[in-house]
Every structure is written in structure tokens, then in C-alpha cells.
Image (cartoon, rainbow, N blue to C red; front, side, top):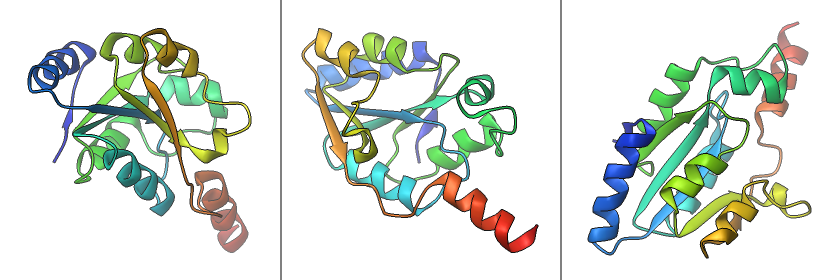
Length: 158
């Protein structure tokens, strides 16, 4: 089971990974209403290295990015669910709208996002390039998204 860490704690754990010659994989997101698409992406990310750290947008950041009705699941609960996944080694909540600050601090060898970023690229890609990291886009499961899940709930129950 993974841990929920502050950036300072994550940096200490990152140093231990470096000392052991291990590869850090990093991804980030809101992970509101955790679903099979999230899990598949996280498992694919974890397969790319020795440890997977997940940056988690705070509730305030989620509201700025998705609107006042989001997140549906509070940050502490989202963090706990992510940390419970076998493929996740650490969850690091953050307040900003992008994970650039975490990426520049942790310098993961591999940064992963879903292939839904194929056209525009993830906003954090430039930060990864500054230290020579690698950006990998993993396949997303068709029709699996929090927005689609919310729409299904509305259609069936409202």
C-alpha cells in the first residue's frame, strides 16, 4: 500500500530511490470518482519503472479546473483510495493547477499521462524536458472517464 506524502517527505523517499538506482515514474490528476480507466492508466504507468508517485490535485485546484461542482470526492478520500492501489507507491497532494512544481522538484525519469493528451501534449511536458526526463502517453480505456460516469449517473437517476 502506498503512502500519502508531503513534497518534503516525497523528496526524501526520492533520494532513497536514486541511491538504489531505481526509476521513478510520476503522473498526476484529479482522480475524482476513481474508475477502471484510472486504474488501467496507473497500472500502465507503474510498469514503466520501479516506483510510481501520483500527484493529486487539491479540492481547490479541482474546482478551478473543473468548475464549482467538482470534485465530487474530497481530496483526503481521493488520496486514500489512490494510496490503497497496489501499483501506487506514493500520493502527493498539490495546490497548483499543474504538477510542474512537483515534477521539477522530484525529477522523475518518466512522466506519464493518458493518450488523450496526444494532440496538445501535457502542460507539464516542458518541465520534464528541462532535466531530460521522458514523457510517455499510455492508452486510455474508451468511454471511461469521470465526466462520462457523471453523465451516466445523471441520465439514470435524475
